[in-house]
Amino acid sequence: MLDPASLYSYEGERPALVEPPLVVALSGFIDAGAAVRQTVEHLLATCRHEVVATFDVDQLHDYRARRPTMTFGGQNWLDVEPPRLRLLRVFDEEGSSLLLLTGPEPDVQWERFCAAVWRIVDELGVGLVTVLSAAPTAVPHTRPSGVTASASRPELLEGYRTWDVEAQVPGHASALLHLRGAQAGRDVISVLAHVPHYLAGSDYPDAAAVLVRTLSGATGVAVDVTALQEAAAVTRVEVDRQVSESAEAASVVTALEEQYDASGDEGRGTSAASAFLPTADEIAEEFERFLAKRDEDSGPE
Image (cartoon, rainbow, N blue to C red; front, top):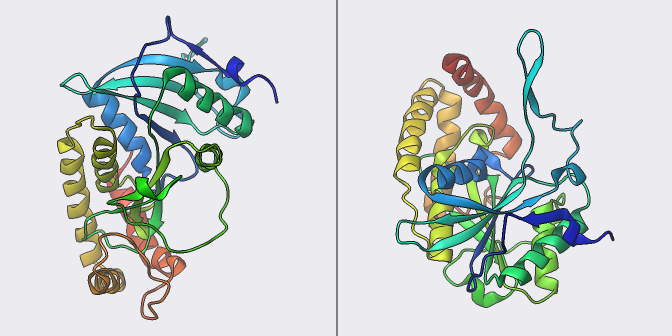
């Protein structure tokens, strides 16, 4: 492995911190409803922040797979929006802070990237590492979003719901980071927000709000979620309207509500044992028509 330390550089002097919490919020594979992206955008829009370190994205990014936006001015190229993978320090109004690692999930050199992150953890004396993600689950939009968690030791899971299943899934850099941390005996917890299957491809601010509340609880950094709650209310009204226009969609939502209420499950989304509940593919098919109509009605941004 090439030297992990050459993947990143600090902005100025390395800050002297006392067990700061680190939140990992990478965009890419596991971000249903764009909940992780919206969480990061909300943090940066509402909280004072500063750059602590920057990663050399050229060593980690596949530009042909995810091409940056460039601006052409008619006679010349004017600008480019390069991908940025950065470590930020985010402050709340009381001066408490957390470290936020955000940017595109690396396309290559995952092991080296993970080694670099854990090296930074040691250099800055980081305490708990919290990894954020969001996935489509069999929950209705008419009920509160929830989260499930996994952690490197059981004590970290107090107050969280967990998935009592074993499964093989496609890997992603955030999961590998968690795995390597757990194998090294570090404190790391991964929090997964639940997004209704049928809204996984649209912005779902309710899931972002629950991620922000969760990271606030885990880190002690207070972040106001009013803007996300207001956006969630607008989304709920729009989805309700479109569900009301489709008997098929309404029946799917009703089935999801019954499953949710019967299990007493606040967003867990465990539905495999319910014979009456449609599969993810069936849900997606039922909602494809009205989601497409929603996009048409919204028009270009």
